[in-house]
Length: 382
Length: 185
Image 1 (spheres, rainbow over the protein chains, first blue to last red):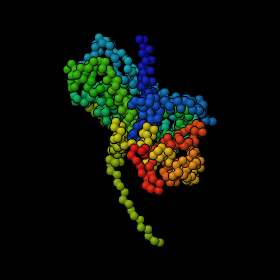
Image 2 (cartoon, rainbow over the protein chains, first blue to last red; image 1 turned 45 degrees about the vertical axis):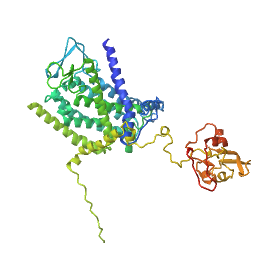
Image 3 (spheres, rainbow over the protein chains, first blue to last red; image 1 turned 135 degrees about the vertical axis):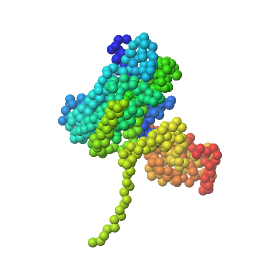
Image 4 (cartoon, each protein chain N blue to C red; image 1 turned 90 degrees about the vertical axis):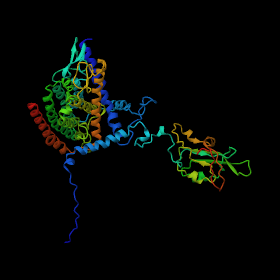
């Protein structure tokens, strides 16, 4: 198959088959069903595709109904709005959430030959070459790329707020840009420690390094090396997605709907989907950097190795099964962190705006700086 | 100047752990997560949701006194119990019952309704006709909802339709109301 065809298939599978599917399912399953379960309710279950079967009461077809409703609604542009910016803002919010997936690896590169596990749990491909089938774009600055692209959505929110010609939108846009910029500082700094330890910005390489073992039994996941960084990054990441308890930019009790007040129809839907996609993306970042990415604990190219590798695996697993297990592990990890974020959303009340800023600048930033300092000292000593 | 007796409330001092919020957030998450998994239990009886899903759940949970569509009760020989005394049509606040009386063949029964029409569109489901009936002839305990309709003429329920819904009643006039086994409720 030609290279470009593989790329298109990868893009279709990852972006449309996974990210978009999960994001649109989250509108029903994550927000409405999960909150219903927490609050002893049932949640939406009237939209049905089948009259029988276990799926009939899950309410999943609601997202199709919602989509149709969104598309069919009237699309209004307020008087005095800057038309060009007003139309371009939803794309700026939504597209970065999809572009950023280019560097997320769902599996290690595919080995066309025989795979071998040598000491230190490194996998060597003999008699073949590594093929990049499970990551859209293999660049060694993947982390930088992901952050650069993801921060573009700040512009989307700010432009949406300004271009709407509404004071609610303007305040919402200001709030969201202030909040996102503050928390991006913390996000970057909390990751500095982990970059220091791994010595790479490549997501795939990072996941590969987390296959080593600590003290001979514990998988060397980022969360065991940098628990504080995980905590700070997860909080800052949740703040980045602009969802509760950090959903000040659209605090409806004060600002109607913040920077999306004036949007209607599918533009509103796209803004919302962008938030869900950002949630999934934060889940993916946490999974890759702190929970081993596609690594299944103790599973290597030829099977399970408990303890130091001896040449033959303790439990042999065929390579294709290893690949499937690893893809499954990556998806499971992402979905778990998405679920956890939604759990936080439905547990915690919204912050006050000054509390958000205090948390960002006075608590999380010093913690991440201290974490970086301690990590750097320890890395220099050992 | 009088003095005001102010009661000084002792403030709950937050400990360091409470101030850091982390254990409290974890506790809150514990509550919501346990609730989430309780309500995901495959056994529906062990969930804590108490929503009754109406069309699927049927009418079994309705109270015995729940008022639905009318029915006319029958005598033991299958004739209508109604004696066309006009009590129900008199008390009906919506004027939805129309009765035309006729003489009964049996000399012990004075009258019977030749025409008995209930306009279900006008009915306000107040149940006064059932209260007024002296001989347990009309009841609203069918458990059947008034059906939505597109044609108003179908809203006039004739005597025979009402009797088809009805069951046997062996209540004695002026006496006790008896319910026989096997009679629909």
